[in-house]
Length: 629
Image (cartoon, rainbow, N blue to C red):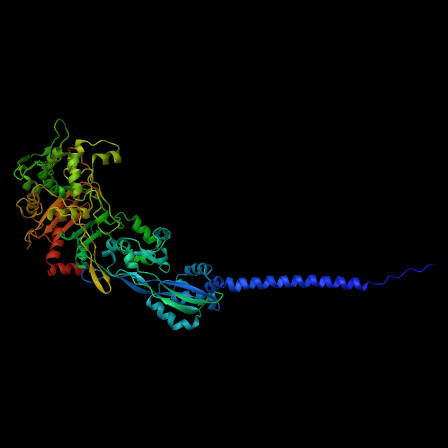
């Protein structure tokens, strides 16, 4: 059998192949190393600045710091809204050995609501474990003391102090100052639209109503920042930079807390409002609505039952009756209507008019009755204002018509906002033909005009508007806007705010003002004046006008019976007054709901307010205010 031939290895070929593979591998390695070094150059040299910034972002954290809110004072420097420290119990979960047991012991030790435990663990899930979580936001002094003694038993738990708004006069100033409360979703949206959200990065509360809301930008201040170094878990290691916040601006109001307290005392047990202002410059010295409520309830978050009680209260304490309450102005506007009639030539100071028991539009059967069943007999404009004769002003309204009345009374500020520095204001209604068509889809009738002629019918106004219109009267047409803000503090100095004027009312003869004002003088000082008893023996001379507004319509032959009517159907009492007569320093308007006649109920209140303003050292007045406090 032939043997197979053994093949020999080709070492030359194998060596050539090996070197070719080695060369390819070397070239591949060189290319890979070149790519690696090129990428390192790109990262370390070309993109150095970008990655350094991103690294700093991971290492440096910017923490916002809330500014201290500005304080609010009255015109005499009495503090009306301050910032008080509150003590909050906070726990850092990662520092606690047994978080559940710690919470149980703290609830027992501090006598806390057991429901806080569930709320706390819900909040823990929303925070990192090295961040403190609030267990209870408000501790009293006894709870702070008990915790301080036992703090060593609770690692990770601590008490932190914060500033919260506090209103020392409580319900006396609620409808003026408003209140602070937690920022909600609507506030966030509004701040976004105004590009102000960044300034509230560390702020929990915001002004909701009144002066707190209107002057929010002044009172809030500007947020501060601190740059802190954090580790990869977000824990703060050290502070790198600190930019302090700018505190809010302190402000002074035109209010006089003594007059405010006096007004509240006079309204005790009644529903109504009082506004007092100085006619020359529009400074609001008192603005009170009753009933009221304690604004401090809202600062820390009002409870559901407390809020429902306010909402369901039939006396509606949440409404600012002084600027939002709308009432028929009744006879308080008869002096303004007299000015209109004199300027239009419908009457003269010597015009004689016979006031019977009622007024009738020619060729109609409806009778518009006077408040006195047998009428007032012969009168001129002075006596018509003094005795508040309805028939005299029915006749004026009929002859001049709604168009002229709307034009003149709009100049006195009716049917429009007064310009006061509050957002919570109603404009009331100064009716017109167009208004009725838009509102009721009906044409204007002559009978509508007659009712408007005595401040009834569709005409409504706020106590603030009545005070402003009376100020325009005593200033002979100078239209000053009412103001609450007196001054702001800049660089440690008080800077007074300018007076805000509107378009003046110019009459053909300046004496027309004097005729109407003389009629208001006779209301208080005349033999037939409707308020002569309320203002008897005053050491100063005043002028005024009473008003009694029906809240429902009587049948043609129905007589008003105060006692037989349900309370909410009884007449509203109104009164406007000013003093001293020759150089008026103060104007006051009073509205009392469902109490009866203006001269018997509202006039004494107006007199007491003028006494408090012009006779501040009267012992009886001081005793009344002190007792109310």
